[in-house]
Image 1 (cartoon, protein in one colour):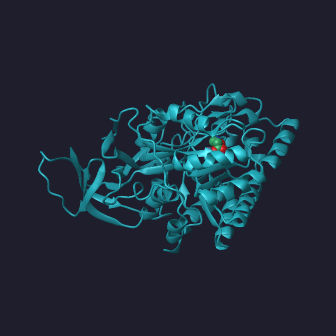
Image 2 (cartoon, protein in one colour; image 1 turned 135 degrees about the vertical axis):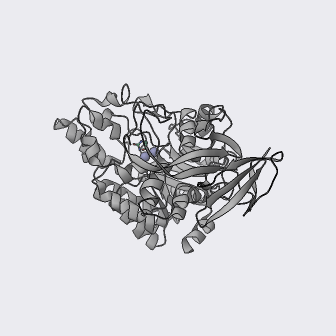
Image 3 (cartoon, protein in one colour; image 1 turned 60 degrees about the vertical axis):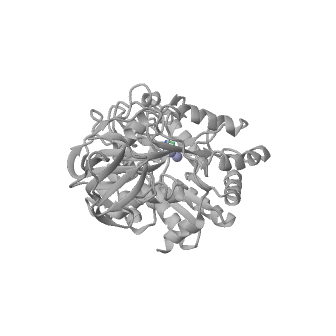
Length: 471
Ligand SMILES: NC(=O)NCCC(=O)O
Ligand SMILES: [Zn+2]
Ligand SMILES: [Zn+2]
């Protein structure tokens, strides 16, 4: 049956206007000031007093990911349900590879994790841990057959996920040839390895040492190095989870020099800070992310970078671990605390409440940062990331004035704590449609497991993204 969303305020990355939206066969078929249909023809959804914007696209999730001897708690079922409750309709998850193992096995593993579970659409990025003739021979099929058009390289997590500079450089060259966007976790893993060993040898075991052994300089250095190699390879780079001014400065400098480089930050870096890691009774472990939470001054740098376009996107970096039974693996040794936290559900709300409501970014920037730009960078636009005739009807109906408090008591993630516990936010997702079907209706989950579709994504489009830059 057709659906018509009536009386809402439509918000895209460029426009804000009152209009009705007609949905047929999962696609937006008409947008007009008034769409008149009788009740027998279409289901009417009244969005009066609400914003109607494209579903969020979260380009950075780790669902059911093995890490530090355990596995992240939220999987494609609980993770995508929580994402939908938070106004996100697409996630792109990181498919981890193992050196020496065929890439197709890794991708198969990720398909097995997600199929029959996801309630919203999803895609994968591919981790590159090594480059050799075998890997090079496998990558064209990854792009052409799987539609995986982004590769991820870790510059940190020594002896686990970390790749060397040759691997990064060759990945950049190969990505340019094949039409992929390279993503990088930019921290100097070798320096961190030294600093963490020294901290432990000096008897420092508490969670805050996670941050003290990963100072902003090591993120700035790695970001600058990755940017330089990208310029040298004339390739394209997306720096994930930027946490500090040092990294923003390197990205800005490279962009000013014509390097095709993009930066993502995450909600935790915008609203939490290093003092959270100092909480007593090992509670600081809840706030262990890599890169770590920073001194509060870095928050201002990140907000102004989002406003000025020096950073372009917000990912959640969802990688949740229970406080009891997972984070506590690191009691007595901060290096054993699994890195990551639950953020998928609150990403959109925090950007709206702290960004739009506090006048740090505009409403249209909000849509661009949490959805549209991600669609463009990751080969999903205009199928996703906007409200336009012909686009998928991935739509959020959002109450911009509802005040509420974030809490583990009410969240939908599987973990036993919420990193933003007690935070007051304004704005609430009311109804969410994925390809025209309700997933959340009047704040209740009405979706079905397995209805989320795997997305084969288009190649990285430098012209399209460069054109956005010129606007
Ligand atoms: N960010 C984090 O601490 N955990 C997830 C893995 C990663 O993105 O580095
Ligand atoms: Zn990372
Ligand atoms: Zn991550």
